[in-house]
Amino acid sequence: MIRFIHAADAHIDSPLKGLEAHDGAPVDILRGATRRAFENLIQLAVDEAVDFMVISGDLYDGDWKDYSAGLFFRRQMVRLSDRGIPVYLIAGNHDAASVISRKLSLPENVHVFSTRTAESKEVPGHPAVIHGRGFPNRAVPENLAPDYPAAVQGRFNIGLLHTSLTGRSGHDTYAPCSEADLYQKNYDYWALGHIHQPEIIRRDPWIVFAGNCQGRDVRESGPHGCWLVTVKNSLDVDRVDWRDLDVVRWRILDIDLTGVTEETEALNRASQAMARAVSEAAGRMLAARIVFTGATPLHGPLHRDFHRWRAELLACAQDQGQDAVWIERIQALTSPVYDLTQLAERDALTRIVLETLEQASVEPENLPDEIKEMLGVLPNEIRSDIESDWMGSERGSAVIEDVRAIILDALTGYAGNHGGQGT
Image 1 (tube, rainbow, N blue to C red):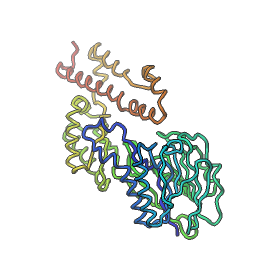
Image 2: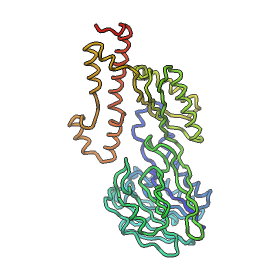
Image 3: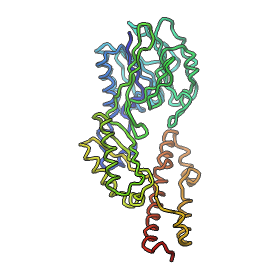
């Protein structure tokens, strides 16, 4: 029997973008999360006494500012060396050969694959062979899979590859390939990296993304960790078991306020959602984005008194326990229950206001030319972050919606105070 761990995308010391903009953010906990998750990975390997570990790229998040990250990794590898556990790894786009300028010698149990050509490495003492190739440069647009060596007969064949496959939202297209490209190699298990959500693509053969060890923002919500793979003596996969490693659990909490008229009920629903998520996080800090949805009379007050609502929600978070919940953002994506048709018929000025609000939008094609030009020169990853943050019902449209809600709330109040008659 063979037992090994498949991990990827540790992104050790990855910076958490925009953290300083969040008042009260648990900076120390969040910034240290990637290291603590990696320590959990090493502890898992020790506790399970695995035969070896494979890491499918992006061990680091980029070039080292100093030798701290390298020394941290080396220290963890020594822990495995002391237990006789070898590690096989490839470089990904974030730690490609052209990216990491500083080097440290590694313990003998660490085996790094070439970035020039695909190669194979036998696992001493076990009927397993690992094939892999690292990234020579940050951007690798070509398909690397066809050049991987043929499967070795009588061995359990593992392929290490950092790839986007045929493409995934939010990830650059690197080393693209198809399932057919991988299938044709006749390997038993493809250990993939680059995509940050864990995913089993297929089981015959096994084609698996490990995801990253620690989610780094709300787009990487849910459990993050690694796979523990058990292979039978017949060299068939027996089990592929998930193991959590993350120390901070990112979650989007959707709070449906449809038909809710009382603020106390809305806050109670939010508090209950937090409590459930805290329970599911199993002792980890919960980094939550609160998203209110649904048609509700609270639409206007929620936008108009947003700072007070935020304070109340922060109080709800405090009630969950110390360092149990950090609220990353609150979004009000509710809709009003106003009769807009009736409002528009009230008088000409109100109709003009409503038509103007309806036309107001923040779409990519409506961005000023100078903004488009600046976005055009940014790297893909940075540009996609900015565009999703601005256009994805976040910054731009949220500002428009705040203004729309406040105006509609005021118009409705005006109608109620004047018996719905125009002036």
